[in-house]
Length: 396
Image 1 (cartoon, rainbow, N blue to C red):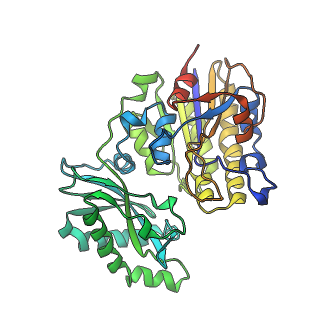
Image 2 (image 1 turned 90 degrees about the vertical axis):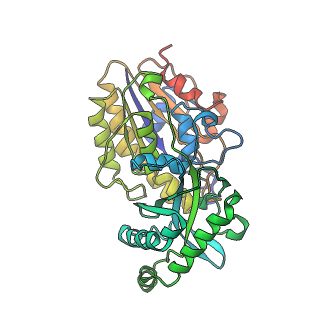
Image 3 (image 1 turned 180 degrees about the horizontal axis):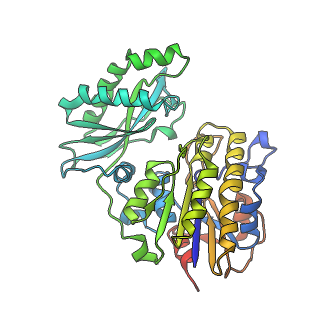
């Protein structure tokens, strides 16, 4: 049996006035996803259990078949695993965003998708500035970076993800709990350095948003997962442009396949991802392709760009993988957004997203195109979320 999973991050949404009351999934021309829903099963899945903040980390952990209540230790540890960072017993790992705060509000959680060379320069200077505070910063991709804090393993903190507070007063979302004052002090010192940093002077002169602050969140200790192959059987390979999914792949013991131009943004190399997925299917029994672009469009509140991301995912990834699946006697394919990222709120939602799957041994039941409305009407509702992977992998 060959298994294919396509994860269009944040693809689920709400009806939008500019789309005549349709969601991007309803409005998009996605014939291959629709074929899967029409010729297989269509439903909804609880990817974010009660008590968890909706995000790719928790939601994708559920989709891969792992109970977040048992396995989740934070977002940053998963990204650290992607970079093979060594973590001491007394250290806590934080996600460190470069952000733009204007008039006290979260104006941009990506600092205008800060260029890599700008981010690298700022990370180097942060390490020089805050080495006396027991901090070590590690450059990632653009605005997505990490910080390791020493003498911090016992801290008990709650930190708000910056992408969930667009245009809101940041003073309403300070770190909470034991060690909060220390984390706020680190962020304040960084802000003072960034205020007139040469990188930001250049960015302002070029008409770009400056990286006015760092935002620390997603903290935790290293994650340990039972290998996916031991849990479900197939040996898997993962294609993605973001560290959170790379880290999950590493923790699950899956092969990471890098694709040139896989940016984790709307300009990602869709065609390259699809071609790499088709090639990987010859060697691996399970191929996972993650696409961040729909989520980025949701955070920007741009339904048209989300439609474009969905259509390109369907044309260049789902279509070729579906055609490749036909070449095998036994196969299954699953399309599963991790969570909604509604364009109306520009933030993640815990509302159960739709999914669809089909295969050589799957009997069609719902026979409706792929969208939120049809998934809700289907009556197929999987809770807890890890049950979807169990169902998808089941040969019964």
